[in-house]
Amino acid sequence: MTRLLRSILVVAALAAWPGSALADSSLVSIQTPRGAKQSFILIKPEKPVASVILFAGGHGGLGLKSASAMQWGAGNFLVRMRDAFAAQNLMVAVIDAPSDQSKGMNAIFRMGAGHAGDIGAVAAHLKTQAPVPVWLVGTSMGTFSAAGGAIGGKGDGLVLTSTITRSKPDWKIAASHPNGVASMALQRVSVPTLILSHRKDGCDITPASDAPKLSARLTSAKTVETALLDGGDPPQSEPCDAKAQHGFLGIEKQAVETIARFIKKQSE
Image (cartoon, rainbow, N blue to C red; front, side, top):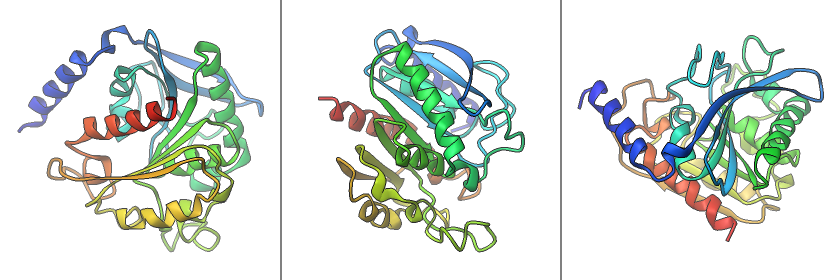
């Protein structure tokens, strides 16, 4: 299947999902408590049952120009599937790097109190748009952000996908956080948490086999579930990039549905 044909099929599938035509997309910028400008794409279904704040991997600096134009990250799993989340009746906020992080967000910033405060400001804004639970959803490096926000009490639920569980030797956090997100204070997370991985994720710092390591650290979470997915398309990128099992290539819809199902289950 060619890339063009796959793109056409994905667009057609999203258009056919219930609620997809009802979503209103816009670019929003707010000032956070520490004085930074935080921009994000906001997608509002007609009747959202919950909100999700999506944190892309890598440096996370999307360079948003509008609700549909960005300088980087369009192919990231969470970014490219933002409309699919909205089609599940979830209000969506796709986070850019804040104004004072022009080179993007490293792990140290993502785990810091300043970033957690920014996340809290976005969550508060979403609450003004719809009085529904706000979930923090990260993928790859974005899991540092999502976990940090949950540790800081900034969300009502947490979803970790393709989670960083092994720090590279040359990272500044290698000594303090050898197990990546699993080295964070996850025992302080009290909200329901989903751990989602592709069983054959070939990225050496996000193996699905480390899911139990994460689960064991979430001792205070209200609920912890692990979902390991299979299948998909052959990789079109390096193992740690978005167009491989690391980014759920070919099973994006299944990944989104798994996340949405967990979120909705917690609201029952």
